[in-house]
Image (cartoon, rainbow, N blue to C red; front, top):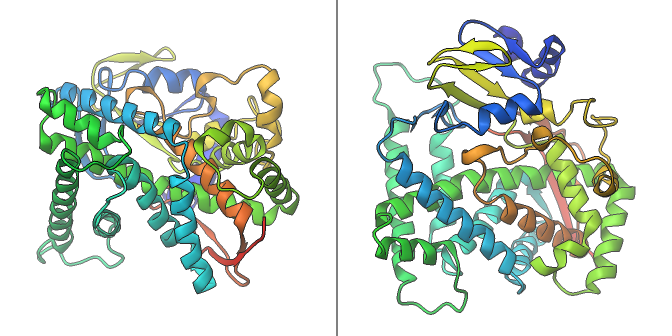
Length: 414
Protein backbone atom coordinates (compact mmCIF):
# COMPACT_ATOMS: atom_id res chain seq x y z
CA UNK A 1 0.00 0.00 0.00
CA UNK A 2 2.89 2.38 0.70
CA UNK A 3 4.33 1.72 -2.76
CA UNK A 4 0.92 2.23 -4.34
CA UNK A 5 0.39 5.57 -2.58
CA UNK A 6 3.85 6.80 -3.63
CA UNK A 7 3.23 6.14 -7.35
CA UNK A 8 -0.16 4.65 -8.17
CA UNK A 9 0.22 4.39 -11.93
CA UNK A 10 3.83 3.20 -11.79
CA UNK A 11 2.88 0.56 -9.24
CA UNK A 12 0.06 -0.73 -11.46
CA UNK A 13 2.35 -0.99 -14.47
CA UNK A 14 4.96 -2.80 -12.36
CA UNK A 15 2.62 -5.43 -10.90
CA UNK A 16 1.50 -6.79 -14.26
CA UNK A 17 4.80 -8.65 -14.62
CA UNK A 18 3.41 -11.19 -12.13
CA UNK A 19 0.67 -12.40 -14.46
CA UNK A 20 -2.87 -11.86 -15.68
CA UNK A 21 -4.36 -12.30 -12.19
CA UNK A 22 -2.31 -10.86 -9.34
CA UNK A 23 -3.23 -11.38 -5.72
CA UNK A 24 -2.23 -8.61 -3.30
CA UNK A 25 -3.78 -10.07 -0.15
CA UNK A 26 -6.83 -12.09 0.84
CA UNK A 27 -9.14 -9.21 -0.14
CA UNK A 28 -7.84 -7.68 -3.39
CA UNK A 29 -6.97 -9.13 -6.81
CA UNK A 30 -5.79 -7.32 -9.96
CA UNK A 31 -6.80 -8.36 -13.49
CA UNK A 32 -4.28 -7.72 -16.28
CA UNK A 33 -5.82 -9.30 -19.38
CA UNK A 34 -8.75 -8.33 -21.61
CA UNK A 35 -10.27 -11.82 -21.29
CA UNK A 36 -10.37 -11.69 -17.49
CA UNK A 37 -11.50 -8.05 -17.53
CA UNK A 38 -14.46 -9.09 -19.67
CA UNK A 39 -15.25 -12.00 -17.34
CA UNK A 40 -15.50 -9.58 -14.41
CA UNK A 41 -17.19 -6.56 -15.97
CA UNK A 42 -19.79 -8.51 -17.99
CA UNK A 43 -21.08 -10.10 -14.80
CA UNK A 44 -21.49 -6.91 -12.80
CA UNK A 45 -24.92 -6.86 -11.10
CA UNK A 46 -24.83 -10.63 -10.69
CA UNK A 47 -21.54 -12.27 -9.71
CA UNK A 48 -19.87 -8.90 -9.05
CA UNK A 49 -21.20 -5.58 -7.77
CA UNK A 50 -20.22 -1.92 -7.55
CA UNK A 51 -20.06 -1.02 -3.87
CA UNK A 52 -17.93 2.15 -4.06
CA UNK A 53 -17.95 5.11 -6.43
CA UNK A 54 -15.01 6.98 -7.97
CA UNK A 55 -14.33 8.83 -4.73
CA UNK A 56 -14.39 5.71 -2.58
CA UNK A 57 -17.81 6.54 -1.16
CA UNK A 58 -20.12 3.62 -0.39
CA UNK A 59 -22.71 3.01 -3.12
CA UNK A 60 -25.72 0.73 -3.11
CA UNK A 61 -24.95 -1.23 -6.24
CA UNK A 62 -25.30 -4.76 -4.96
CA UNK A 63 -27.46 -7.30 -6.75
CA UNK A 64 -29.65 -7.47 -3.64
CA UNK A 65 -30.73 -3.84 -4.04
CA UNK A 66 -34.51 -3.67 -4.47
CA UNK A 67 -34.21 -0.79 -6.94
CA UNK A 68 -31.46 -2.29 -9.11
CA UNK A 69 -33.70 -3.68 -11.86
CA UNK A 70 -35.66 -0.44 -12.14
CA UNK A 71 -32.47 1.62 -12.02
CA UNK A 72 -30.87 -0.41 -14.80
CA UNK A 73 -34.00 -0.12 -16.95
CA UNK A 74 -34.02 3.66 -16.55
CA UNK A 75 -30.28 3.82 -17.07
CA UNK A 76 -30.52 1.91 -20.33
CA UNK A 77 -33.32 4.18 -21.52
CA UNK A 78 -31.32 7.29 -20.69
CA UNK A 79 -28.23 5.93 -22.42
CA UNK A 80 -30.25 5.17 -25.54
CA UNK A 81 -31.54 8.72 -25.58
CA UNK A 82 -28.14 10.25 -25.00
CA UNK A 83 -26.51 8.27 -27.79
CA UNK A 84 -29.39 8.77 -30.20
CA UNK A 85 -29.24 12.49 -29.55
CA UNK A 86 -25.54 12.51 -30.30
CA UNK A 87 -26.12 10.76 -33.60
CA UNK A 88 -28.88 13.18 -34.55
CA UNK A 89 -26.88 16.29 -33.67
CA UNK A 90 -26.57 17.29 -37.32
CA UNK A 91 -26.93 21.00 -36.54
CA UNK A 92 -24.19 23.21 -35.15
CA UNK A 93 -25.45 23.28 -31.56
CA UNK A 94 -22.55 21.26 -30.17
CA UNK A 95 -19.89 23.31 -31.91
CA UNK A 96 -21.71 26.56 -31.14
CA UNK A 97 -21.49 25.77 -27.42
CA UNK A 98 -17.75 25.12 -27.80
CA UNK A 99 -17.26 28.43 -29.62
CA UNK A 100 -19.22 30.33 -26.94
CA UNK A 101 -16.87 29.06 -24.24
CA UNK A 102 -13.73 29.41 -26.37
CA UNK A 103 -14.53 33.07 -27.03
CA UNK A 104 -14.60 33.73 -23.30
CA UNK A 105 -11.25 31.92 -22.98
CA UNK A 106 -9.78 34.03 -25.77
CA UNK A 107 -10.88 37.18 -23.98
CA UNK A 108 -9.05 36.01 -20.86
CA UNK A 109 -5.95 34.98 -22.81
CA UNK A 110 -5.00 32.17 -20.41
CA UNK A 111 -7.17 29.50 -18.79
CA UNK A 112 -6.75 26.93 -16.04
CA UNK A 113 -7.42 23.89 -18.25
CA UNK A 114 -9.39 21.56 -15.98
CA UNK A 115 -11.95 24.05 -14.56
CA UNK A 116 -12.50 25.67 -17.96
CA UNK A 117 -13.00 22.35 -19.76
CA UNK A 118 -15.21 21.01 -16.97
CA UNK A 119 -17.50 24.02 -17.39
CA UNK A 120 -17.63 23.43 -21.15
CA UNK A 121 -18.31 19.70 -20.72
CA UNK A 122 -21.05 20.35 -18.16
CA UNK A 123 -22.85 22.62 -20.63
CA UNK A 124 -22.45 20.18 -23.53
CA UNK A 125 -23.85 17.25 -21.54
CA UNK A 126 -26.58 19.28 -19.82
CA UNK A 127 -27.89 20.55 -23.17
CA UNK A 128 -28.11 17.03 -24.55
CA UNK A 129 -29.80 15.71 -21.45
CA UNK A 130 -32.17 18.60 -20.85
CA UNK A 131 -32.33 20.66 -24.04
CA UNK A 132 -31.08 24.23 -24.66
CA UNK A 133 -32.49 25.48 -21.35
CA UNK A 134 -30.10 24.21 -18.66
CA UNK A 135 -30.83 26.69 -15.88
CA UNK A 136 -28.33 26.53 -13.02
CA UNK A 137 -27.36 22.93 -13.70
CA UNK A 138 -23.72 23.49 -14.83
CA UNK A 139 -22.98 25.68 -11.80
CA UNK A 140 -24.61 23.19 -9.43
CA UNK A 141 -22.64 20.31 -10.98
CA UNK A 142 -19.44 22.22 -10.23
CA UNK A 143 -20.56 22.83 -6.65
CA UNK A 144 -21.46 19.16 -6.21
CA UNK A 145 -18.04 18.10 -7.41
CA UNK A 146 -16.37 20.47 -4.94
CA UNK A 147 -18.53 19.08 -2.14
CA UNK A 148 -17.64 15.48 -3.05
CA UNK A 149 -13.87 16.00 -3.10
CA UNK A 150 -12.27 15.22 0.26
CA UNK A 151 -10.96 18.28 2.06
CA UNK A 152 -7.25 18.98 2.08
CA UNK A 153 -7.33 19.52 5.85
CA UNK A 154 -8.69 16.80 8.13
CA UNK A 155 -11.19 18.05 10.68
CA UNK A 156 -11.23 16.61 14.20
CA UNK A 157 -13.59 13.67 14.54
CA UNK A 158 -15.71 15.55 17.09
CA UNK A 159 -16.55 18.30 14.60
CA UNK A 160 -19.83 18.06 12.67
CA UNK A 161 -19.46 16.57 9.22
CA UNK A 162 -19.68 19.83 7.28
CA UNK A 163 -18.70 18.09 4.05
CA UNK A 164 -21.64 15.68 4.22
CA UNK A 165 -24.08 18.45 5.05
CA UNK A 166 -22.87 20.50 2.09
CA UNK A 167 -22.95 17.44 -0.17
CA UNK A 168 -26.56 16.65 0.70
CA UNK A 169 -27.63 20.27 0.35
CA UNK A 170 -26.04 20.77 -3.08
CA UNK A 171 -27.26 17.34 -4.20
CA UNK A 172 -30.83 18.27 -3.31
CA UNK A 173 -30.50 21.60 -5.14
CA UNK A 174 -29.17 19.90 -8.28
CA UNK A 175 -31.86 17.20 -8.23
CA UNK A 176 -34.54 19.87 -7.75
CA UNK A 177 -33.24 21.96 -10.65
CA UNK A 178 -33.01 18.90 -12.93
CA UNK A 179 -36.56 17.87 -11.97
CA UNK A 180 -37.82 21.37 -12.78
CA UNK A 181 -36.19 21.33 -16.20
CA UNK A 182 -37.38 17.79 -17.03
CA UNK A 183 -40.94 18.75 -16.10
CA UNK A 184 -40.62 21.94 -18.14
CA UNK A 185 -39.92 19.87 -21.24
CA UNK A 186 -43.49 18.58 -21.16
CA UNK A 187 -45.04 21.86 -22.25
CA UNK A 188 -42.17 23.81 -23.80
CA UNK A 189 -41.61 23.34 -27.52
CA UNK A 190 -37.84 23.41 -27.90
CA UNK A 191 -37.59 22.15 -31.45
CA UNK A 192 -35.09 19.44 -30.53
CA UNK A 193 -37.06 16.36 -29.58
CA UNK A 194 -35.29 13.22 -28.49
CA UNK A 195 -33.21 14.58 -25.62
CA UNK A 196 -32.89 12.34 -22.58
CA UNK A 197 -35.45 14.35 -20.60
CA UNK A 198 -38.16 13.66 -23.21
CA UNK A 199 -37.58 9.91 -23.08
CA UNK A 200 -37.59 9.93 -19.28
CA UNK A 201 -40.84 11.92 -19.25
CA UNK A 202 -42.40 9.28 -21.49
CA UNK A 203 -41.16 6.53 -19.18
CA UNK A 204 -42.66 8.35 -16.19
CA UNK A 205 -46.01 8.61 -17.97
CA UNK A 206 -45.95 4.86 -18.58
CA UNK A 207 -45.09 4.16 -14.93
CA UNK A 208 -41.71 2.63 -15.77
CA UNK A 209 -39.82 5.04 -13.47
CA UNK A 210 -40.68 7.77 -11.01
CA UNK A 211 -39.93 11.49 -11.57
CA UNK A 212 -37.41 11.28 -8.74
CA UNK A 213 -35.72 8.33 -10.43
CA UNK A 214 -35.60 10.22 -13.73
CA UNK A 215 -33.86 13.15 -12.07
CA UNK A 216 -31.35 10.85 -10.34
CA UNK A 217 -30.40 9.28 -13.69
CA UNK A 218 -29.68 12.69 -15.25
CA UNK A 219 -27.70 13.81 -12.18
CA UNK A 220 -25.58 10.64 -12.39
CA UNK A 221 -24.88 11.23 -16.10
CA UNK A 222 -23.98 14.87 -15.54
CA UNK A 223 -21.60 14.25 -12.69
CA UNK A 224 -19.83 11.22 -14.16
CA UNK A 225 -19.52 12.47 -17.72
CA UNK A 226 -18.51 16.12 -17.38
CA UNK A 227 -15.36 15.44 -15.38
CA UNK A 228 -14.13 12.57 -17.57
CA UNK A 229 -14.76 14.46 -20.83
CA UNK A 230 -12.91 17.50 -19.52
CA UNK A 231 -9.92 15.43 -18.44
CA UNK A 232 -9.70 13.71 -21.84
CA UNK A 233 -9.78 17.04 -23.69
CA UNK A 234 -7.10 18.48 -21.40
CA UNK A 235 -4.78 15.54 -22.12
CA UNK A 236 -5.59 15.78 -25.84
CA UNK A 237 -4.58 19.42 -26.27
CA UNK A 238 -1.49 18.89 -24.12
CA UNK A 239 -0.46 16.04 -26.45
CA UNK A 240 -1.15 18.15 -29.55
CA UNK A 241 0.96 20.94 -28.09
CA UNK A 242 3.80 18.44 -27.61
CA UNK A 243 3.37 16.97 -31.11
CA UNK A 244 3.23 19.89 -33.61
CA UNK A 245 3.24 17.57 -36.62
CA UNK A 246 0.08 15.77 -35.42
CA UNK A 247 -1.48 19.11 -34.52
CA UNK A 248 -0.86 20.34 -38.08
CA UNK A 249 -2.48 17.21 -39.53
CA UNK A 250 -5.61 17.79 -37.44
CA UNK A 251 -5.80 21.42 -38.56
CA UNK A 252 -5.26 20.50 -42.20
CA UNK A 253 -8.01 17.89 -42.01
CA UNK A 254 -10.44 20.29 -40.36
CA UNK A 255 -9.67 23.04 -42.89
CA UNK A 256 -10.01 20.67 -45.84
CA UNK A 257 -13.17 18.86 -44.73
CA UNK A 258 -15.10 21.77 -43.21
CA UNK A 259 -13.86 24.69 -45.36
CA UNK A 260 -14.42 27.19 -42.58
CA UNK A 261 -17.79 26.06 -41.21
CA UNK A 262 -18.46 24.58 -37.79
CA UNK A 263 -18.43 20.77 -37.51
CA UNK A 264 -21.52 18.67 -36.81
CA UNK A 265 -21.96 15.06 -35.73
CA UNK A 266 -22.46 14.05 -39.36
CA UNK A 267 -18.91 15.25 -40.12
CA UNK A 268 -17.30 12.85 -37.63
CA UNK A 269 -16.85 9.89 -40.06
CA UNK A 270 -14.79 12.15 -42.36
CA UNK A 271 -12.58 13.53 -39.56
CA UNK A 272 -10.44 10.39 -39.51
CA UNK A 273 -7.26 11.91 -38.08
CA UNK A 274 -9.16 13.91 -35.45
CA UNK A 275 -11.03 10.82 -34.28
CA UNK A 276 -7.77 8.83 -34.16
CA UNK A 277 -6.26 11.54 -31.95
CA UNK A 278 -9.23 11.27 -29.58
CA UNK A 279 -8.91 7.48 -29.40
CA UNK A 280 -5.16 7.58 -28.85
CA UNK A 281 -5.59 10.13 -26.05
CA UNK A 282 -8.17 7.89 -24.38
CA UNK A 283 -5.81 4.94 -24.76
CA UNK A 284 -2.85 6.66 -23.11
CA UNK A 285 -4.81 8.59 -20.48
CA UNK A 286 -8.16 6.92 -19.77
CA UNK A 287 -9.95 9.11 -17.21
CA UNK A 288 -11.33 5.99 -15.52
CA UNK A 289 -7.88 4.66 -14.66
CA UNK A 290 -9.13 2.03 -12.18
CA UNK A 291 -12.39 0.09 -11.91
CA UNK A 292 -13.26 -2.05 -8.91
CA UNK A 293 -15.88 -4.73 -8.33
CA UNK A 294 -16.84 -6.65 -5.19
CA UNK A 295 -17.55 -10.37 -5.38
CA UNK A 296 -21.25 -11.02 -4.62
CA UNK A 297 -21.50 -14.74 -5.39
CA UNK A 298 -18.88 -17.50 -5.03
CA UNK A 299 -17.09 -17.81 -8.36
CA UNK A 300 -13.84 -18.74 -10.06
CA UNK A 301 -11.50 -16.52 -12.06
CA UNK A 302 -8.60 -18.02 -14.05
CA UNK A 303 -8.98 -21.18 -11.98
CA UNK A 304 -8.75 -19.31 -8.69
CA UNK A 305 -11.75 -19.40 -6.31
CA UNK A 306 -13.20 -16.06 -5.21
CA UNK A 307 -15.50 -15.53 -2.25
CA UNK A 308 -18.14 -12.85 -1.42
CA UNK A 309 -16.59 -9.70 -0.06
CA UNK A 310 -13.34 -10.01 -1.96
CA UNK A 311 -12.52 -7.29 -4.50
CA UNK A 312 -11.28 -7.45 -8.09
CA UNK A 313 -9.71 -4.42 -9.79
CA UNK A 314 -9.30 -3.71 -13.51
CA UNK A 315 -7.08 -0.87 -14.74
CA UNK A 316 -7.76 0.47 -18.25
CA UNK A 317 -4.49 2.40 -17.87
CA UNK A 318 -2.61 -0.91 -17.62
CA UNK A 319 -4.59 -2.75 -20.31
CA UNK A 320 -4.11 0.14 -22.75
CA UNK A 321 -0.32 -0.02 -22.34
CA UNK A 322 0.09 -3.77 -22.77
CA UNK A 323 2.81 -4.52 -25.37
CA UNK A 324 0.97 -7.74 -26.26
CA UNK A 325 -1.72 -5.62 -27.92
CA UNK A 326 0.00 -2.32 -28.78
CA UNK A 327 3.25 -1.66 -30.60
CA UNK A 328 5.23 1.04 -28.75
CA UNK A 329 2.52 1.18 -26.08
CA UNK A 330 3.77 4.35 -24.35
CA UNK A 331 4.10 6.36 -27.59
CA UNK A 332 1.44 8.80 -28.83
CA UNK A 333 0.73 7.32 -32.27
CA UNK A 334 -2.78 8.21 -33.56
CA UNK A 335 -2.04 6.43 -36.84
CA UNK A 336 -2.33 3.07 -35.04
CA UNK A 337 -6.14 3.58 -35.13
CA UNK A 338 -6.14 4.40 -38.85
CA UNK A 339 -3.91 1.45 -39.73
CA UNK A 340 -5.80 -0.94 -37.45
CA UNK A 341 -9.00 -0.65 -39.49
CA UNK A 342 -7.56 -3.21 -41.92
CA UNK A 343 -5.45 -5.17 -39.41
CA UNK A 344 -6.30 -7.80 -36.81
CA UNK A 345 -8.89 -6.34 -34.42
CA UNK A 346 -8.03 -5.78 -30.77
CA UNK A 347 -9.44 -8.09 -28.11
CA UNK A 348 -12.72 -6.54 -27.00
CA UNK A 349 -11.53 -5.32 -23.60
CA UNK A 350 -8.02 -4.27 -24.65
CA UNK A 351 -9.46 -0.78 -25.25
CA UNK A 352 -12.05 0.20 -22.66
CA UNK A 353 -11.90 3.94 -21.86
CA UNK A 354 -15.61 3.88 -21.00
CA UNK A 355 -15.55 0.70 -18.93
CA UNK A 356 -17.51 -2.36 -19.98
CA UNK A 357 -20.41 -4.64 -19.18
CA UNK A 358 -23.85 -3.52 -17.97
CA UNK A 359 -22.39 -0.62 -15.96
CA UNK A 360 -20.27 0.90 -18.70
CA UNK A 361 -20.45 4.62 -19.51
CA UNK A 362 -23.98 5.49 -20.64
CA UNK A 363 -22.95 8.04 -23.21
CA UNK A 364 -19.87 6.40 -24.73
CA UNK A 365 -20.96 7.15 -28.30
CA UNK A 366 -22.09 10.66 -27.43
CA UNK A 367 -18.78 11.30 -25.62
CA UNK A 368 -16.79 10.31 -28.73
CA UNK A 369 -18.94 12.54 -30.94
CA UNK A 370 -18.67 15.45 -28.51
CA UNK A 371 -14.88 15.13 -28.18
CA UNK A 372 -14.31 14.90 -31.94
CA UNK A 373 -16.55 17.92 -32.56
CA UNK A 374 -14.92 19.89 -29.73
CA UNK A 375 -11.42 19.01 -30.96
CA UNK A 376 -12.25 19.97 -34.55
CA UNK A 377 -13.84 23.25 -33.44
CA UNK A 378 -11.01 24.29 -31.14
CA UNK A 379 -8.17 23.14 -33.40
CA UNK A 380 -9.76 24.75 -36.44
CA UNK A 381 -10.53 28.17 -34.96
CA UNK A 382 -8.23 28.64 -31.96
CA UNK A 383 -4.66 28.10 -30.85
CA UNK A 384 -4.37 26.34 -27.49
CA UNK A 385 -0.77 26.16 -26.30
CA UNK A 386 0.58 25.21 -22.90
CA UNK A 387 1.33 28.29 -20.85
CA UNK A 388 5.07 28.75 -20.34
CA UNK A 389 6.24 27.75 -16.89
CA UNK A 390 3.34 25.42 -16.13
CA UNK A 391 4.26 21.81 -15.40
CA UNK A 392 1.20 19.52 -15.39
CA UNK A 393 1.34 16.51 -13.08
CA UNK A 394 -0.61 13.26 -12.96
CA UNK A 395 -3.50 13.43 -10.54
CA UNK A 396 -5.35 10.25 -9.57
CA UNK A 397 -7.35 11.78 -6.74
CA UNK A 398 -10.56 10.84 -8.53
CA UNK A 399 -10.05 10.39 -12.27
CA UNK A 400 -6.80 10.69 -14.24
CA UNK A 401 -6.21 14.42 -14.81
CA UNK A 402 -3.28 16.72 -15.70
CA UNK A 403 -3.36 19.05 -12.70
CA UNK A 404 -1.59 22.40 -12.94
CA UNK A 405 -2.13 22.62 -16.71
CA UNK A 406 -2.86 26.04 -18.21
CA UNK A 407 -3.39 27.02 -21.85
CA UNK A 408 -2.87 30.27 -23.70
CA UNK A 409 -5.84 30.77 -26.06
CA UNK A 410 -5.75 32.85 -29.25
CA UNK A 411 -7.80 33.04 -32.44
CA UNK A 412 -6.73 31.12 -35.54
CA UNK A 413 -8.08 31.71 -39.04
CA UNK A 414 -9.28 28.44 -40.64
